[in-house]
Length: 156
Image 1 (cartoon, rainbow, N blue to C red):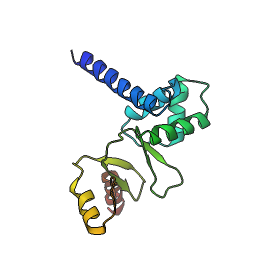
Image 2 (cartoon, rainbow, N blue to C red):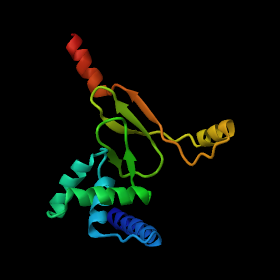
Image 3 (tube, helix red, strand yellow):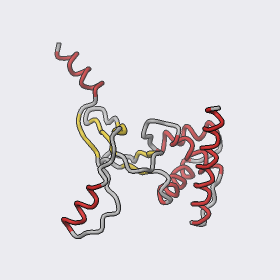
Image 4 (spheres, rainbow, N blue to C red):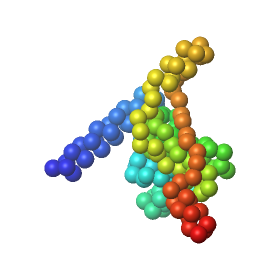
């Protein structure tokens, strides 16, 4: 029963993505579909190299350039997010809806923050500045629980 619902949801999602791609004259190629599935099915925020390594397991002859091009197309279509936090490489997020992130300043771990997005912030900034605000992105910086535990153990 639950698997039927899951399969139906995946089917509906793929139809929506295909409609979006057609509307923007971009085909849903096997490579795009695999890359999107990889990002949708991971909780981490991987680099393009990580996505490439995962994609090679399914499409052995895929190139790193193909992965980068398809990540860029999926980003432009609004299907994924590209996250830049001052590191030497971008990370990608399969959740394209607006949500917050926490970045550990010690180990660079990047995780989603499970809390509602404050929708009133866009209007507040728009009313205060007169600028048109389309969306906002917020990151919290600090030390993750694993690093805190390691630091505490080292101090003992």
